Amino acid sequence: KISMPYNSKLNTTWSVDSTDVDLAANSLTPINNQFDTSNAVTSSYQSFAIYLSLPPNVLVAGSSLTFSLHCIFFSNTNTSVSMVTTTSVIIVVNSPPQSGRFFITPTAGIALSTSFTFIASQWLDEQLPLSYEFAYYSTSQLYQVIRSKSELTFTTSQLPGGSAQARFTLQTA
Image 1 (cartoon, rainbow, N blue to C red):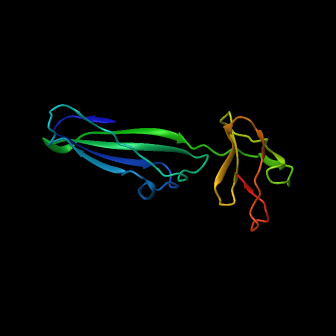
Image 2 (image 1 turned 30 degrees about the vertical axis):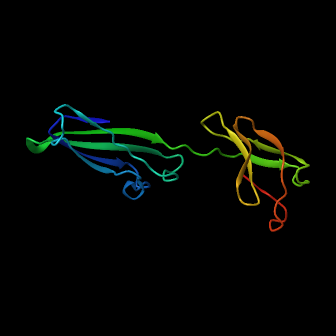
Image 3 (image 1 turned 135 degrees about the horizontal axis):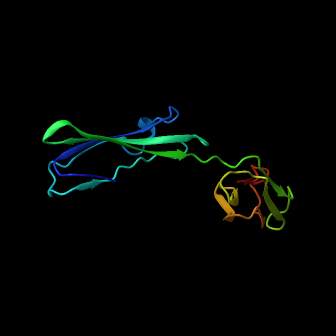
């Protein structure tokens, strides 16, 4: 949030220190903003929130990025720059867990009769604890959760039959 006095102007610009992220092309919010309090009803300070919002999967996993907000203040009584300031934040983008295994036992069974055990093991990540969710895609391609996210690395469930087109198999997720 930025507070600025009555009868002033402000220009802001977001930037990032990486050529891997094109803010102009990807930002869901404006990266350049202009604020003007010269026509404000009150003669006190006004506050403005300046957000940067990016869609999913724009940032590279494992990267460290510095996002900066550059601000240039102008006084309406003077067209020259009154103050220039920059604030920055370093964001470390999380990487997915690595090196793990996922398997189901048994590998075949009878629909709604056989108990299948889902097991996730040997997954490594710097950010602990890990959470696991076990699911499958129904014959109509709906994501069906068997066990919601938890720290448990296994679960057991009976499954419906797959479609004839899929040779009566299901896709796990």
